Length: 99
Image (cartoon, rainbow, N blue to C red; front, side, top):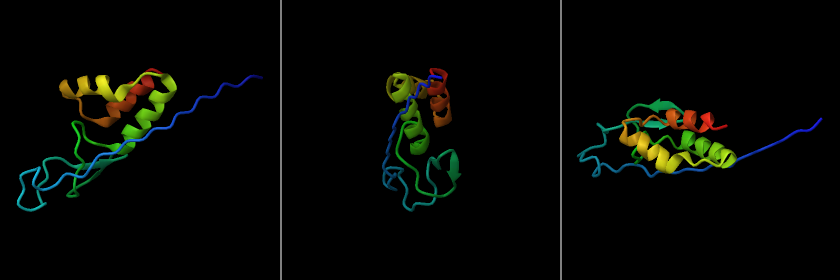
């Protein structure tokens, strides 16, 4: 019996949004939500990104891209953002579609 293995390592990071960037006097009404691994953390300081900024799903997407050789976070995800798709689970689904 022959086995074939492939593995990928992914990483991603985004900085936390500062109140001045969101034009807030206090950090109580952020323009977006903090989302990590698809979990929404209401009222918490969000991450700066053109998407929802879910660094956990982005890292997983990058790991899958490493296996498939097709880079999703970059040109493909940027176009998806321009088309109004900012949910990181859509980027992950796109990466999985190439596996």
